[in-house]
Length: 407
Image (cartoon, rainbow, N blue to C red; front, side, top):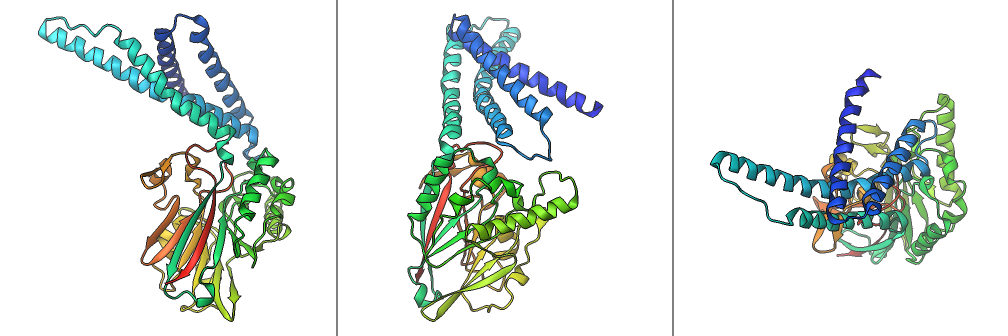
């Protein structure tokens, strides 16, 4: 316990400092005590709720929706305060510099009248942007499904598959869901694409197979003309919670795999299937999870057994770090890889054709969208569901539709 004392003291000092600056901003622009103390009381309530959830958190339960909401509320009130503290601390630093200049020169330099109030107004105005964004992200953003379409051309695509369409979904994370009507809307939107093939690239639950019990009837409605195939993601193995005994984890893993059959998907665990059309075929390869630094159950060689190098190949691999480290330069030539995993961190800024940014880019080289190297593609789906943070800000849930073209 003693090793936590110093970090807790530092954390307490940071929290108090942030709250003092925030209170000063409200105090500067308003004479109303109600305005001054309301946001402070809200912050205290959020801190108490978060730390109460931390104290009662158990790895045997995993991340419950209640724990995720406590995390979401903490981020919602904390991140806007970073804007406030940066501006007000900068203004304080400017004052200190002026005083230092005055002390050295022997003169007197006075700050502009009303500057503190202006800076406070500016800080609160700017802070309102992330605050409103996070509120929207928690209430509606996590259901703001976007259909993203790509048309990809390949010279060696069999003629029969010219115009063939694939819908990719990823990262369902059913243990986070709370609104069946919204999830049903997302499933209906997937079906509206009417693709030839549907591919799910992993993380059907957060940890436990039972998380999917209330959602099987919804996801069993997913349709594709020529089949539905899936793979496992890192969360499907139950590695992020404590189990009463090893057998419980083994039994849970089997139940997770059984879910795929219940909702009509053919689960590929280091396996492959040929998709045939008009006497021609393409190879569909599915590996188990392979992630940089953890869980490397994926076996590319085993998964590709029985297919030929000249075959047109689509690879399903949950973690895009697998493509970066193992797949993109493989001589066996995997034409198109479909991944997920990153969620784009569920927060960032995307304006098509202008900017695409998220803190996720500091962890993954390929973190959202389509990438091409060595004449091969990987698409990193932003995910259908959400995890840890119960919302999405700027990085919306994704349904990918890919049309294959000959050329």
